[in-house]
Image 1 (cartoon, chains in turn yellow, green):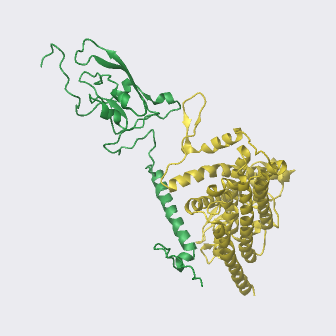
Image 2 (image 1 turned 90 degrees about the vertical axis):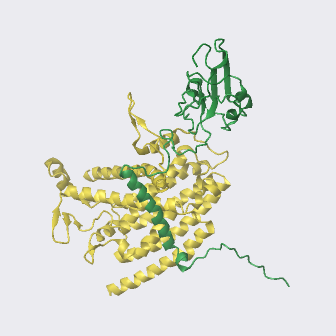
Amino acid sequence: MQDLVVAIVFISYAIGVLMTFGLVLTWVERKQGAVMSDRIGANRAYLRIPFTQVKLVWWGLFHGLADGMKMLLKEDWKPASYDKLAYALAPWVTFAPVLLVFAVIPFGGTLRPAELFSGFPSIAAWFGDRTYPLQIATLDAGLLIVFAFGGITIIGAMLAGWSSSNKFSLLGALRAGSQMISYELIMGLTVLGLILVYGTVDLRNIAQQQSGVVLGFLPAWGVFYQPFAAILFLTAAIAENKRIPFDLPEAESELIAGYFTEYSAMKMGLFMFAEFIEIAIVAALFTTLFLGGYNLPFMTDDGFTLPGGRTIALSHGGVLLTQVIVFLVKVFIMCSFQILVRWSLPRFRYDQLLRFAWKFMFPLALVNMCVTVLIVWAVRS
Amino acid sequence: MSKAPVRREYWNAPAMGWWERSYLPEILRGLSITGGVFMRNMGRWITGRKGALTTYYPEETRPDYAARNRGKHVLTQRPDGSPQCIACNLCATVCPAKVIEIEAGFDPADTAHPKFPVRFEIDYSRCVFCGMCVEACPEDAIRMVKEVPSFPGGDRRHMWLTLDELLTWNPQKDVAKPYPPKPGAPG
C-alpha cells in the first residue's frame, strides 16, 4: 500500500514534468530561436482574466496553450485510402515509448519517508523504515530498457509513413528507418565505453558513482571520463530524435512533413509533442550518463561538504529538493543546448547523413571504445 | 579514343584544410557564434533594454523612414482649416487602383472655390502607394507623408481613411498655398 502511494506520486510527478517540459519547450524553442536571430518571437497570445481587461501576456508563454487548443479543435482529416489500424496506432507507438523511457531515469536521491515526515508521527509510523529511490522503476537493466524503447519509436515512424499511403510519407519513413537504426548503433557503441567505466547498466548506480570528486576539484561526471563519448552520444541522440541538422525524415523542402504528412489535428500534435518530450528525454539521459544526474559536486546525503572541511547541513527534505531541482536545471540546460544546435546548423544531405554516421561517427565510436577498454584494463590490472 | 572528361575548376572552390575537414571545431565555432548572439541579446533583455532589431508594430513605428517615402495620404489645409481640395476628382480618375472616393459639396459663399469635398475616403486595402494622386492634383491638396498608415485590425472596413483623419496633418512650416482673401477682408 505504501509502495503504491509512493509509486503513484512518482509517476504523476514524472508525467507532469514531461508534459510541462513538452509544453514549455515549444515556447523555449521559439523564443530562443528569436533571441538568437535578433527577433522578438511569439508574443501576442494572452489570457484575459475573466470580467477584467487584464491581459496576461507573459512573454508569449501561452502560445503553447493556443497551439494545443488549435490542434485539439481542428478537423481530424484522413487520406482517401489508408491502413486504418496502423494509421491510428502510429502516433501512440511513437508517443508512449518516449514517456516510458523516463521510468528508469533517476531524478533524485533516496527518499526516506519516515525522516521526511518526522513532524507527523502517524505518517512516519505508517511508512516505517522503508526507503524509496526517486525513480519509477528501479531496474538493473536501465540502459537496456532505454535502448529497447528507443527502438520502438522507429516502428512508430515506419508505421506512420507506410500506413498513410503517400509517397512522401513512405520516403520519410524509409529515411527515418535507416537513419534511426544507424544512429542507434552509434549511441549503443558510445554508451558501451561508459558501461565499461562504471561496470553497470543500472542508471541509478551510474548516477551514484558520479557523486564523488576526482583529482580534488573535478566532479566525477561521465563527461570527464568519456569526453568523446559524450559528444558522439549527444550527436547520435539528436539524430535519433530527428531534429535539425538531422531532420531528413521530415525535411519540409523535400518531403512536406515526411512520415507524418497525412496526419492532422491532434495526431500530428502527438508526433510534435513526442519530439519535444524526446528533447527532454535525451537531455535527461545525457544528464544521467554524463553530467552526474542529480548530483552536485561536494554534495552528500547530509548536505554539502566543501573542500576546506566546512560542511553545510541540510535536512532530508532539503537534500531531496536540491537534488530534484539540480536534475531539472541540468536537463533544462541540455534542452537549451539542443535547441541552440537546432537553430545553428544547416541540414545534411541524405548521403552525407549516412556517410557521417558510418564513416565518421562509427569508427570514432569504435576507437573510443577500444581506448576505453585499454585504459580500463590497464587501471584494473 | 575518348578523352577523359575535363573536370571544371571553380574559382570559388572551397579551400578547406584538415582543421575545417575535421568538422567538430567548425561546428563548435558556429555554435559559439550563435550562442554568443543569444547571450548578448538575452543580457540586453534582462537588463531592461531591447535585444532585437524587430519593431514592435503597431505599438512602435520606425522613426527612420526615408524622407521621400510614400506613406500615408494627407489633405493640405487652408489657414482656416478647411481642406484645400476642390473635389475635382482628378486624383480619383488617375488612381490605378480606384481607391479614392470623393463626394463634392457646393458652397456659394466661397466664390473662389465653390466646390469642396463632403466625403473624401481612401481604401487602404487596395491602395498601391504609387503617388499618382499627388502628381495629378492641381491644387496641391493631397500629399503623401513618410509615415505609414496604421491599420491593423480584424475588419477590412478599418482600412478606410476618412476626411477627418486625412485633415489631421499639422505641418511645422505652413506650406499651404496663399488663399485669395474673402471679399471685404483686409489685405
